[in-house]
Length: 246
Image (cartoon, rainbow, N blue to C red; front, top):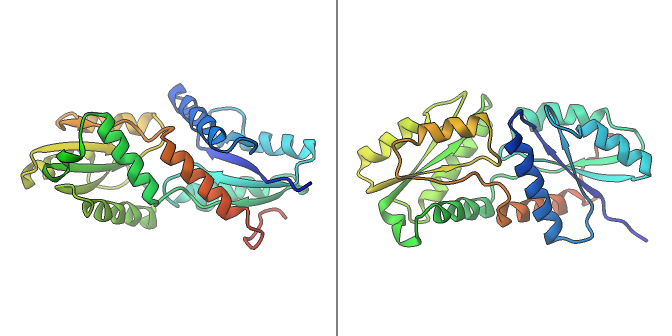
């Protein structure tokens, strides 16, 4: 009998308990969408179980194939460096494939709009509303460029304007982007956090949205996010992809 690879969702972890709670809620959503698929969660820091601990447990059970999925929206340092480093330390019996990060994806844009509508906007508001696409930020130029590209793409779906902003490492900050959209003449300004779970940087985004009319929730366990996880899993379990630790 052929078994599907185990899906290991790798989250960063946080001292903020809301972070792990949100990650677990998202994983429960993934399991509900694909009953029978084994989905495990490991954290790089702060929370348990650790990624290494989960991998050792899987190997001890006799599991052979694992798809490691970084719970990240952009391909920056964690996806390029520290996650591969952790996976290289996995038990040798495991065949591990690292999936792509979640973004960009049209499903994530749909999740962003879902959160904005849940916060009070309607599709009829789009043409008069400017949106700040507020991400955590990164020192990686590739990650910053991706956020800018997403903002440009999202603008073409009917919003008055869309501006990227960053909670750390890069500029502009959320509050500056809010003021820019006001100056452009948008009737209302909304802030859409392009982050997966609550924590220190999302809280900074929220503070920067003080002068906005609408602040959406984090993406969290939105059904569209869960579908992206399964898309990335399906793409990575194809044998032609390079395995880590094979």
